[in-house]
Length: 400
Image (cartoon, rainbow, N blue to C red; front, side, top):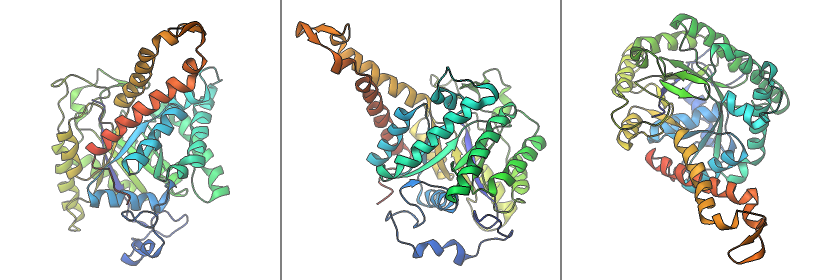
C-alpha cells in the first residue's frame, strides 16, 4: 500500500500575497472571491480551469475539506500519464493533482540527457509543468502541479525548481508549480522543521504551498528506500505535528501541508502485511484543536500520501478526518501497463512484422504498431482507473 498521510496546515497569515504583513485574514478577505464570476458552480469563485496556485489553491483545499472529498494526486512520467490525469478529471468531474518526482523529471528530460547537478531532473519537471500550463484549460478542470519527495541530499534539485518558479513568477505573476514537497523525515525533528522553515520563507514569496513529512513512509518508491525502517518510525505523534505547525506559522504568508505517517508503506501488498492506524488522524485533529482553542474540531487538512491498494473503508475513514488529497502511483502504473498489455494481446498477430497479418501476407501493419495506438490504450486504461479512484475519494461531480 503506498500511503502516507499529510496535513494541510495553513499558517494564520495573509493568504498568498507577496510582501503582505503577517496578519490573520478577516472574514471579509476570505470571502471576497465570492463576488467573482464562478467557473464552477460547486467550487469557490477563485478556482478556474487550468493550473491552480496561491489563494485559489487554498480555497480549493478548504472547500474539499468542508464538502468531504479528496483530490487524487497522481505521479506522472511523461505527457501520456499527464494527459491521462486530466482526461480522467474531465470524465469524473473534479480536480486533479499532477505530481512529478525527481526520477520522473529525469525520465521526462530523457535518460540519456546529462543529469549533472540534477539538471535533467530539473529541466524535465519544468518542461512538463509548462506543458500542463499550456493544455490544462482545454480539459476544463482545475489542475494542481506538485513535486514529490525531496530528501536532504536532493535539495539542489529543489533549488533548481525554485529558480524556475522565480523566473516564471516575474513574467506571469504566479508560480510555475502549485506546491512542492520536502521529505526530511530521516532527519531529527528540529532539523527537519528548521530546513522546512527556511524553504517556506522562499515559497511564501512565490505563492507556493509547502508539503513536508513527519515520520517515515515504509517501502520503496522512485529512489526512496525505507524497506528496513524501524516500524516505530511509521507512526507520527500529534505533538510533532503541532511543533511543526507552530514553527512554520511564524512565516508570513505561509501555507503548508504535513505528511504524517500512520503505518504507511509505498507499493501494494497482500492484505494483513501492512498495519495502518488512521485513527492517528482523528487523534491529531483533536490534539491540535485543543491546542489552538478555536472551536474548529478539524483544524487540519490532511493528505493521504499515496493510496495504492488501500481499502475504500480506510480511504473514507481518512476523509472523515479531513483528508483532502490522496496520492496514487502503484495502481496507475499497473493500469497504464495493463492497457498496453491488453492492446498487444488483442492485436498480437498484427504486431509481429511490418508486413503480413491474418488478413494476408502482403497486408501492412503500420496502423497497429504506430506507438500512438498502444500508448493511447495505456492512457485510456489509466484514466479509467483514476475515475475509480475519484469515486472512492468522493471526488466525482464536484465541479458543477
